Length: 261
Image (tube, rainbow, N blue to C red; front, side, top):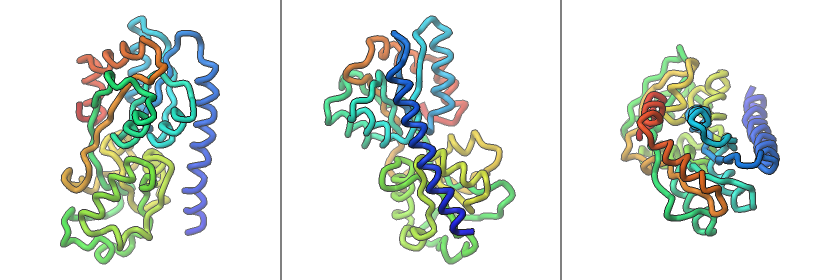
């Protein structure tokens, strides 16, 4: 069973890699005038909705490359054509900015999020988000915890920070199933291949197959900010799309999905 789980966790990055290659090829062959938006995987639903609504206002067609922020940043640095970058944390936006690949004056924080612990619906799991709660000792049956890879996925880095603050990291590190992005971590919990998962509140809200066990205290990890910026060689209409994301219409969409605007 353990081998099957590891194989699944390893296969998800492979699937994501294929998706990235497809997205890159799609971006390279984009129709003249289309906007190519590189956006964090956790914004998949709301950004797809934003694209549809923007096009309905008469804006250009919007094509998305949705992936872990780290992968998107690496693709932009490697020369992938992108008009706009929406990262799930400051770190990867800083990384792209340091390479001179965004227009600094257009950068702003667009969204915020929260970090939660989830489990498959119906699974009994009671957790206190305090240092005196010994997760590993009190919940020995929970051996598989899905999480975005802490080495490069923003949600995973936030998760590691929270676990370290709570004093749980050392006892739980061996139980973590690192995935290519936060949506892959959610998927492992949904299909019951993980006993629990650490994901964004927005990811948990969109799924009817997981239940939120507890929310990590905001002070236990870095503030979760989603910075957005026009890329160095981005279309002038990319700034127009950012302005659209700031409209009351989109504010309602973001908040209904659970994001903090």
